[in-house]
Image (tube, rainbow, N blue to C red):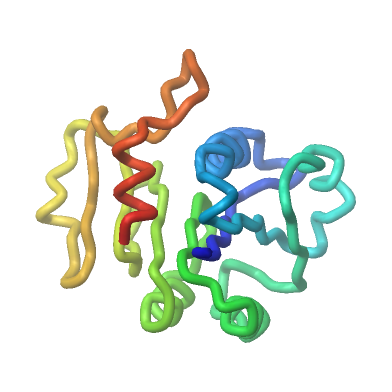
Length: 165
């Protein structure tokens, strides 16, 4: 069984977009083959738990804005295979450290630098060759929109791309 951790922005002032996208993605994985857990900052637990009763969640005292030993220890101890980030606040050094030991996927809305293996961005006007680092794949454009907004379902080829690695 592959173990996947999803880390996304969700707190009082963040809105529901990141959580909605990642909830839909998590529900598309077959639970027989994939163990999906969400990892949230402990300081937001009281707010978050009202909205995630249908998800497996863990809460740690950490910040995505800097490299966190607590995150590294948690991921290592729990033998995580894949980390999926959907956050505006990831420290590039944290991604760089995780990249060494885990398969890292980033969902990017802002055309930020990433140290992940795969980056999804739905913008059509991006030239992925300008963004890509060695060992990294940028998937850009409307064919890589993760969620069909009207159906709230993910395109199967994208899921296979993520989990097939």
